[in-house]
Structures are given as C-alpha cells and as structure tokens.
Image 1 (cartoon, rainbow, N blue to C red):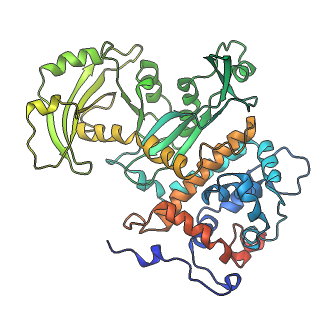
Image 2: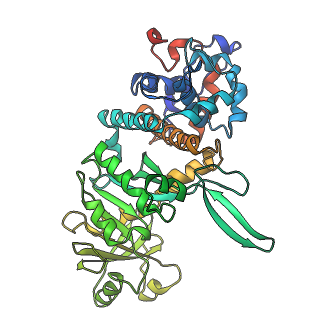
Length: 458
C-alpha cells in the first residue's frame, strides 16, 4: 500500500534541534487542540480546585497530565525530568511551571470532579459540532456499549474510596483493595470515543448519601446516572445500547427506553433455562435459519431471528431474540450439516427491543459483535499502550481525576488521528507510531505560539 507522504513524514534531523522550525506530530497535535477544540482556554475557564492561593494553575497541572498520558509515560516519576525541558514549558507560554510532579499530583487530589466532567463534556460538544460524530455512524445509527472495568487492585495500599474483597488463604484472611468503574464507549468500525464513566461507590460512600444502603454499589446501579448524563448531553445522538448478560433484565431494558433520549437495548443471553432463551430454543428448533457470509470477518453465519418473545420480568414490551452460529473460513467452501455441530462453531445469543423493520438481523448481530470492542479495542489499547492499569495516583478524589485524564487524553488522540490526520484510516501507520512521533517532536517546539494558549492570553 502506498503511504501518504504527509502522514508518514517524520521530523527532519537538524544539527541544532532548538532552532528547528518543527513540523512533526506534537506541533500538529497541540495546534489542533488549540485551534479546533480550544483546549487551553476551556481548561483555564472550567477547571477548579480547592487549594488555597495556588501558585501553579490547576488547568496547567491537568494539561501536563494529559500530555504525559498521550506520550505514554508509565508513571509521574518517569515524566518528572521532562519538566525541566524548555520545549515543554513553551507549550504553556510564560505561566509559572511546577518544579516536580508532586505539585501536579497535589493539584489533582484537590481538583473538583464536576469541573473536570464539564471539561470532558464541552470537548465532546465541540467535537459533535464539528461533525466528528459522523464517524460514529454504524449501519446508519450510532451505538454505545457499557461495561464494568477494574483497572488495578492492591494488597497493601488503600484509600477511602476502595472496595474490598476478603480472600481465604493458608495464612489466614487477606484483604484486597480495588476500584471499579462503569464506562460508556461508542462502538463502530473506526473511531472510538469514551463517553463517560461512573465510579462504583463502596458501602461507606453509599451510606454517606443514603442511610438505607446495605452494600457497595453494583454495576447496574452505577450505570443509570451515567446514562442519564449522556442523554442530557446528547438527547437523540445514540439509539442503541449494548451490554453483556448482566444487562439482560427487564428493569434495564425498560430504563434504557425511558427518558428524553430513549434507546433500545441489545444484551447477551446466556442462561438456557431462563426466558426468553428457553422459549426461543423451542421456536428455533423448527425454524429455518438465514445463512450469509461476513466478508470483513471471513465467517459463515447461520442466524435465527424472531420477534414476540416475553419472559424478562418487568419488561413492558415483547422482545426479539436472535441466535447465531459462526464458523471462520473462506467464502468458497461449502459447509455440511455436520460442520455446524463441530467445536469450531461459536454460538451467540442476544435479546433486543429493536424491531426487524428498523434493524435487520445481520446488522443487529454485527453491532452486538462490535460490543466486544470495548475490551478488544479501547480498553485493550489503554491497557497495552497507555499504562491504564498502573496506579498513577491512589487517592479517593485523585483517582477519579486520573480516570478523566485518561478518558480525555484518549478522546483527544482519537480525534487527532481521525479528524486532523485525515488519511490515517487509509495508511498503514499505527497509532502507537504516531504517539512515538509526537514524543520525538517535542524538542522541536521553539515558540510559545505553538502552545496550548493563544499568544495574547499567555
């Protein structure tokens, strides 16, 4: 494949890098954030913290954290030496700069979570206004997925926001401390955006809000305020929500259809003894399936898809149930009946409230398959390449700020790849190599005009 010359070009070597005008990735990245998303001005106007008379701005500390994550530094300690570098300081104009990363961590611990959430939402709003969400269209609709994430755990370190698990070992009981979050992510074949998250409170945090609480917050409870916030932000943007078997229950199906931005649920089914799956097994036994070939995945698919099932408690409307058998192989082979009973066959079950007239069976199944991108794409990418499972900051408030920093950094990088580097999709250049180019290009920043803030405000 012929590579696009502008996209794959690396910064030219120069005997005096400090004099080099620089046309590499970091310059492009920061210029995109400044001119298109107005990130510096937004952060300065939005972010708040509870420090008394801070000499270093909280917005500057947060943007430094975002830069650290985008450049894939594995810890604050590894990033600290960069604070003395003049090119990094030029990105922030003449503003007072922290001398060590401890100042940054102290600011994040005191930062107001609602102000960071507002910054995240304003970035999404600007991106939507710039038609970036057109890249999220998938089978002519926009879909999202949610799932619980446990980034890291510890046997020794804990904070007031930790949940606990007790393990019975040969040496007695040992307590494991962990945090859980529910994330929302757009799903589709190309660009992914993290739309929000909700921290699952422990029992003490829940009792502080309600004296009737008897246990720590579960995933199904935590996801509801998250969905409500997204509906308020984008009332009619998303029409399909996809979840695993945990979400296959009547109250969740009913909740997703309510509110100002009603959606339809697609959930995985697993229990053959429960309705509506038990009823669907009887119906599908005598029904003839649809057979087709998925060119992109190179898979043969047998699909049963019927409407009118009931069984989920408190679900006020009938459901549509689908069963799919999948065999990987080339299109020109002819499968025999016994091939569909081999161990190579993968079976999928799902339930949805979306009628066939609105979404065809193969399309609904494809959307369900893309639900796994929330593990195999976004969070796999975050874990493998963004050091997501490293506890940069283990603090009740600071940890949630770090989650927002991860989410904002990931979204900014996705928008940069797919909206600024227009030919990224057609090239063979990887996102990891682009991040490496950005890191290499940082020493070429020679002027404050290349920074986050317009020159007249710094």
